[in-house]
Length: 277
Image 1 (spheres, rainbow, N blue to C red):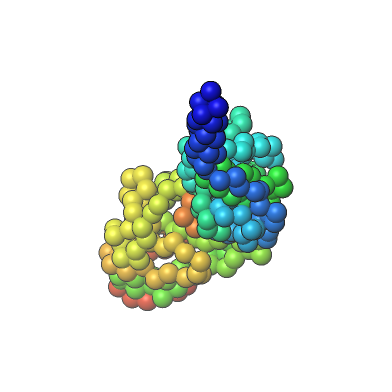
Image 2 (image 1 turned 45 degrees about the horizontal axis):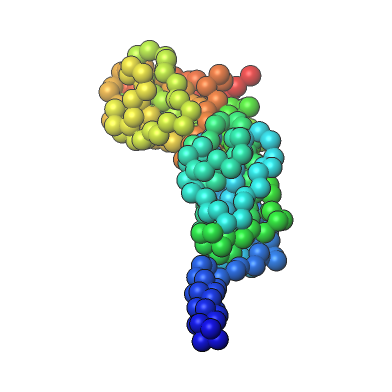
């Protein structure tokens, strides 16, 4: 009987030891949150976010439109992330994980023009069911790009020849990120750029992107002049200059383009100037 009892005790101890050594080790939550949240390259549909990491092994970023992030990630749960807003794990209604990793930046896409977005960065340790999140989040918000309110204040055409002419314009003090110029032969420009669209510009006539019927992009950028080439002699050319904000996801002011026209010729012509009233 004594021998049988010893055997049972040893068996119980052995079973206890086996269960005690299984499973993931217990993690502790990070104690220092991320800091110095900043936003760069704010476009109509995307924004780049940077921060200084806390003392967690990894971190998630939660994004929400219009109102601050209130979602609280659950310990022992890892969340799938997707930098395209709305495609990552939805922790709470309208609150999506846009980043999960050990880096300190992410570019979030799929945003809406002229809308506010709120972000929260939360440090965590562990993986799988040993994941433990910090309680204090780093939070911040931005508004995506909106069209500039004011067009350039003046535009003029100089150095007119049979096959080229030069446009120069002056910016308003409240200028946007850049300018897009359309050209059309014989008739006024009747096309306009679309928000978030990507266009190719060329100062060689008919070589840039065509918007609508016969409207071609001859310039896109932050400068104040362009010389158009490959023109036909004795032809009237019409121009429209549009102001925009953003870089990859541009937002255009299409209600107030600055317009001007001039005729090419076989001899140099006097300059033409238009002021925006």
